[in-house]
Image 1 (cartoon, rainbow, N blue to C red):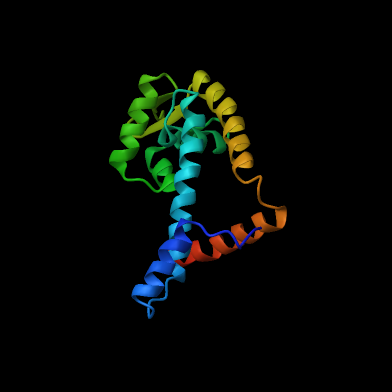
Image 2: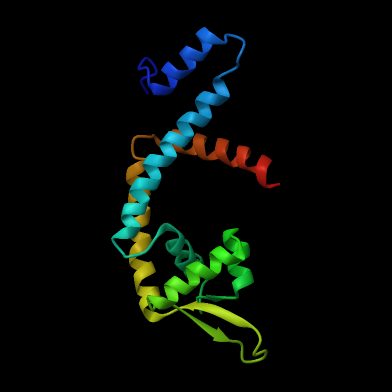
Length: 166
């Protein structure tokens, strides 16, 4: 890792250090770099999903259904809980995927008021192919990091995320 190279965030925090030396700009640097990295990651992951004709949000729905195991079907409330979305956002995603023939809605046999969302055969085939490409992109995006660095970042982010989600 070359820490001697100055980046845009270093230049920004150096300007603040000159103008307002009392500011602790380390959090600004951390968050600024995270946001810049996220934009690069989002661009690459989104391009991967676009190859399959789906958005990142649609990918998330398909992947959630796929990882739920057979019969690859969940109630809308289970989908919401797994994805932490608003019901309106979920409805829009499911509607779009249903129009594409990748998911279907069906009524529960025991309680006709209850609806579930499941992968169609086409949806299962698409997500099985898309998840392989998705993981390959993620591996490429993190390939500059050693295994130790990946594990350190994962551990730090997990710890930080718990502060928001506990």
